[in-house]
Amino acid sequence: MDSNDYLSHITKELKVHFFDLLTSEYNRSYNELLINLVHILEDVLGAEYVGVYEYNTSEGQFFLHTNKVKLTQQKLDYQDWVSYQQHHPETGYKVMDGRPFFYKKNSYILPLYNVDKVIGFVYVLFENEMEVDNVRSILHSIVDEVAKMLLRIRKDSQTLEEEKKYKRLFDVTAKFHSSMNMEEILTEIIDTLRGVYPHFDCYLLLSHDYSSTQHLPIKELKFDNNEIETASAQAYLTGEIQFDELGEQNASFYAPLRGKQGIYGVLQIMSLPPLLFHEEDVEFIKLLANTAGNALENARLYQQSKRLISDLQLINETSHKLNSNLRLTDTISYMANQIKSSFLAEEVGFILYKDHVNCIQDVLSGSTAHFHDPSSEHLRDFVTQKISATHDSVFIGDISTKISSEYCSVMAIPMIQNGSLNGLVIVLHTQPYYFSFETFKLLQSLVHHSTLAFANSMLREELEQLVRTDYLTKLCSRKYLDETIHKHIDEQNDGSFLIIDIDDFKKVNDFYGHQVGDRILIQVANIVKEHIGFKGTVARWGGEELAIYLPHTSLFEGYIIGRVLVEKVNQMTNPTVTISCGVSYWDPTIHNEVKDFFIRADRALYEAKDAGKNAIRRDEVSSV
Image 1 (cartoon, one colour):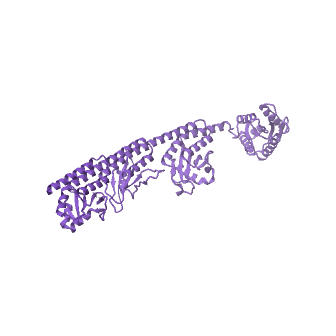
Image 2 (cartoon, helix red, strand yellow):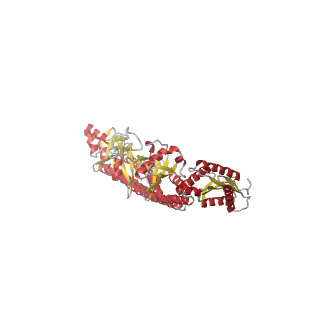
Image 3 (tube, rainbow, N blue to C red):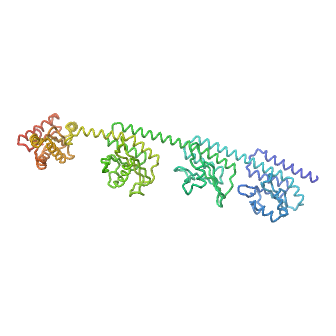
């Protein structure tokens, strides 16, 4: 067989093996295909060793694929061949124009080119020394086929990898559309990138505060004055992919997580050591980032809608409860509990302005314990002064930088009705920056919707106070006292009843005038009210008559109290007046009606009058 036939035979044999390799039903990986290529070359060429060096454009190096490591280097830098060309001009040029050349004893280099680009080379080692020209002829005849085979393997492998990547993208997109949980979406992004690009480091740079229970690689996205020109900030602000310049340590590119309504973060892809990013990889990651951005947007909008629905339900439920004729104390207690449970607040205070000029405040009953403690006064004054000056809400992340306070986070909302500042609600937490702005806005809505209910509760209690209070003396009305006694007796409780009459009050009015008479009536009422305190109920019975009901008080005890009052009025009034007093007693063993309780006290009063006035008598029908 002549040399041409031999070369043709080798070429055909090589093509047959290559065809069998490509049409094999067995799915091999890229590395396995290259190892099989090495075996084919060893068999066809009868070489002791063949190594295929493939050029990696990202790293600018040739990587060895073989099952027999005979060379001292497993990867060669492209610049090594440039250097070799400069130092070995007689053979070095040949590696650049695609011709095989003699390398060392019994070994040859077979450069592989695609048009004018280096794609790799084949190192061939023969066991025995062979004619150099013959070997060159053989290698030259197969170089194109080997290059084509390497390109085909690479293309098929890339196609397969692309198929796997986009299958993965399809799967993760399906998961995105089936989930409204932001944490699940972020986890899927990282898992997908780690699965497709295990040699890259991936980080999530998020534009919003986010806390995760998973160990996700999350970084804070910074775009202040010092960070505005960074690639990450530019990716977030422009919505375009940005690349970091290659450094000695790493290279990064940033893909914005972009939705239809905004950008929700940036995906950072980092290579260690620095590599060039292939266009197809950049396109894949860009597509993943856009898909993830839409999914994050949907999840965020879904969560926002849920939160808004929850907020509206809270406002509606609270408004409905507050409009159900609650008393002021019940209203405040309910609101305090709602705020504590909904906002996880530690302290809630309701402050009512009693005097705007002097900034006199009243902490309403129902506020939490801290606001009734004198230690809260400094914080209350600070907040109320700010609201009094601006009539606007206060939202402070850390008030401890302004005043000394154990509580840092502060929200304060004014209660304004018809343009008038009636009071405010203060919400506190010890942890700095504990409340979000969304929480602050919700509290504003809640207080604004509740202000009318507060005003109505206060007006109702003021009206009730007017109904049960005598206008002149500020004592209870006779109707209120009558209802109190009836309720107490219906519960089978005992008690004593005193009727007081100012002696010769008509003469006082005639001598001093009705204005002085009213003043004396007020003096007597204040003396009686101060002495009785919380022991009983004092009311204006009619005209110059006052009445006292003392629950759980015996006839004798009631008599002693009446005698003290007779003495005090005589000593403390100006002009001096005296009073007469009648005392009666009731307990469940006395079988008569409530009106008899009053009649017996009235009868005792007339006995005191008949005894010369400035005296007290008790009804002796009941024993002590």
